[in-house]
Amino acid sequence: MSEEHHYFYGKPILVHEEQERIQELMQHFKGKPATEELRCQIYDMLTEERAKGLFSVPFKVVLRNDTSGAYSPYIEVILDSKV
Image (cartoon, rainbow, N blue to C red; front, top):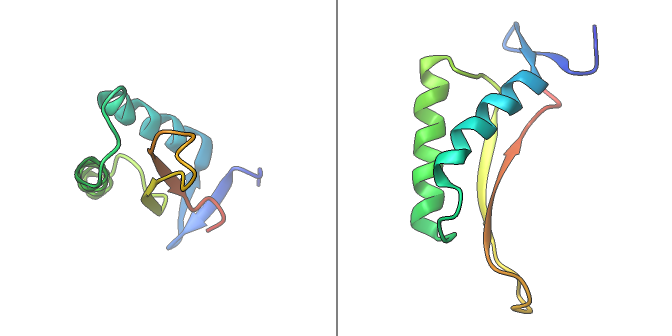
């Protein structure tokens, strides 16, 4: 078993392939300002795609804000690849 081959509820997950699928989906949102509304849209879209069976890795979508104001806010999709 390779490092990228995990099991989740008895199903194998190929983390690298699923990361690529999610990155392809995220291209639709590239260049848009990071807001809470956009974070919710991304979460809803990923939840729908996971329900369709496009990927199965658990994920979390968060909006990151720099408290110092030096960097713009951004949205991060965190994959739980240690399942």
